Length: 393
Image (cartoon, rainbow, N blue to C red; front, top):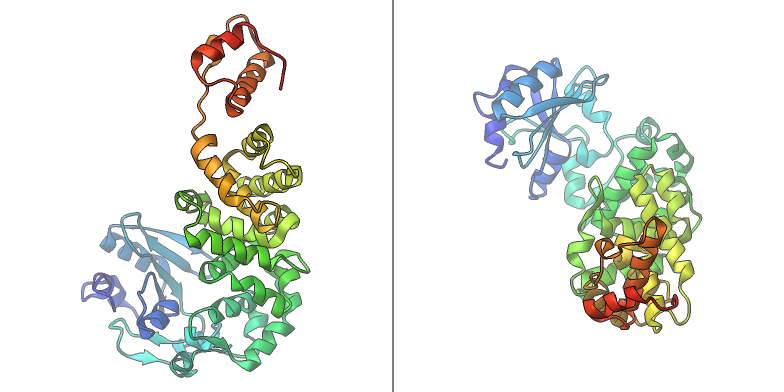
């Protein structure tokens, strides 16, 4: 195990005081030779006292993830990992492992990371790259496992075992009983692996259960993903890595919107995305509908179109191109980066003596439009116009 684990499981660790095992994803990733990011432990003892002692050892905090099931987390902003502790689910470790989701996640090892407990031959499935349910009852116990199975099948070198694939196809209706927040979290985890998750949802009949859709725009999604990864949009990377809500980047949200199209806002509401994310989807829908044949070529129309998109103008440009509305993407992107984003007001409210109320905003808005079309190029011109404003554009 990584060197940091010696801090958690070393000779002085409080975990040595009770039977405890590493389980789940950290064991799987260790066996695959992948970096272990977080740690899951099952303990045959009361969880909270151990969580408190471990938190003290790591100079961290602990809190309940699920008090009823005795699942606690030890974490800190200064730690590069977190530790989840869970009470043994069953009379023995083997019984606990048989109640998990897939055989590759039903492997435990002792705290040294060397002695493995593998009652379901999960290591053999790992070696073969097979995603296999631990039992016929596994999806009924937690229907979210159908979506999780699709996610794991996106891992390089892995595929669904045939009976597991059949079980996922047969479990479509069961997802309706799963909390929307859990579905959203699993969907985003899959999307971070590959946009192919949307294709798999269609192939396995889960589109409606997960997104509330009968079909989606896979072509727009793939084109958008290619654009974001190509480096073609100069300066876009910093914008799209920003979080639009907790642990959801602008790029991830845009991919959902591209696939869902005009139904994106409804899908985001269904999956309990934040109001800010839903507002972005609504803005895209409105501005895409407002696009006219001469929007790209008319200096005033293109300025207003991007202005009304507010902080999601980059998403709007990508979405319009992916929908086939904006073949001149490179020209509009250059305009957005070099002219639109650089536009600064030549006059401010302080210059508008004698005006008040809505008139102030209207005049400042009109002045910016005149700047955008090149009719006001310096402050002297702007002040002269203000002294004797011309007709509205």
